[in-house]
Image 1 (tube, rainbow, N blue to C red):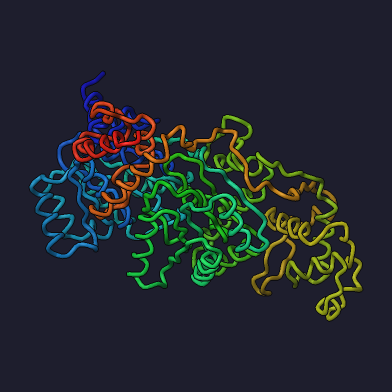
Image 2: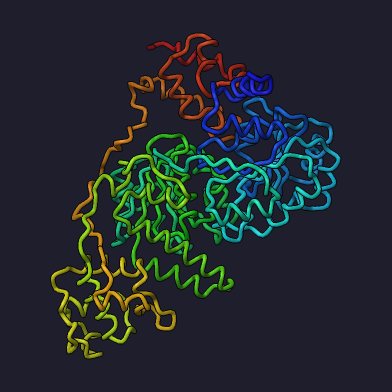
Length: 607
């Protein structure tokens, strides 16, 4: 084994308490520690942080980590400090005196890893400071933020091209959990990584179950999902508007589900308190706009729910990826309806972006709608978007695999619906079209004389829910689109002509009458049962001890020890320091700090 790699494995074990690398980590660490640049795409929970933390410890100098996420900086620095690594931050949370002290430590060579916000790094003062320091490497985290095609573009990231220009001999590693080919290329171009290798790990998160349901009464559906599948679990619920965040959080609380709102309209101190409660307490549901979640390292988020459609598959993947960082079974659940497509298309059309930007945005939205409407394995469809092929035909851990929807010839249904939209003047929305099709004599139908049309009542073979599903699928397929000039109206596209003439074959998915509320994954239940993870009494003592230590140190409980480490202790029941040291997550520093207490808890009376 080469000496540098041997040293890397030694540090991996002594500092982080891990016995071996995962996936491409070893190759990435060796490449960057040797002075190479690279782009790393690795899913949330895949171990991205080690890819720059370990090379920073292996190389001389301080690793500079560029991140836009204050919460992530705080938690990672706390975790590194617990592991005995000299880590610090430079961001807006520091006073002038605190920032000056960090700068002095950097120049003195007393910091192994320094986390810096991009806008701070690009100031003349900070660039001059870095010019005087010994820099081991630059890690640009959340690198997709540099791309205007990415789902979370941040203008301040554009200036990071200065790193390659001012520090050409310092290795650069750009990292992100999600980026399509267009975004990857812009990362490479803007950060000067044209000739650097790309390390692309599998995007598959096998512990996450993907489920997308037709939106009927979204809040009622959400409450049932949480109560039946995730009672007492921590979770995140995403809504598009601030008002919907507040309303949903209130509804969950009324149902006995502890929930907190989070959006930019709240007082900053209140947002911080809510975030801290979510991180530090068990069983809190955070209802939030998409502003929440980036940089949250909480490993035991058991579900992420969407009550509104995200903008793209990248955004969906990034947001759902906040569930199950610890590898245990988790859920990605979304309620989705026609109004979501119409709303997102209107937002794109009315945006101030260029025509090219709008075309790309519509393409990304169409890909997500395709994922929502597919009758195939959702995981397979999701991975295909990122250029990856699922090894098996079906994953066994999505709603379509566990309750396969029926698919039928939809040509006649589509022709009836498109004819109805055309004959009513392409000026009406979904509900009116359905009223006409099923022959419902409403005041509005009578007002416009649509009860006298040939299409009135020709669709009585389907109920309202089935027509809604068919209509939504035709919009997803591009045969109908919203008309921005007539609010809520649906009009035919050019491609609808082939359907009306019978030249285009149409297949429509049928929703099963009732999906099972509880299903087990055929990919293996990764949850730790009491028998697998130790008796509940010992687990209770370990978690209570961890909570007290976390409270004293002012850090989240998972920064002290992850759940997987707690479960390992309860399962192995170590009686000696050597046995405790063998458990993943127990490095030298944690053994020194907590070894005596942990062994005493295992040896406590009653075991």
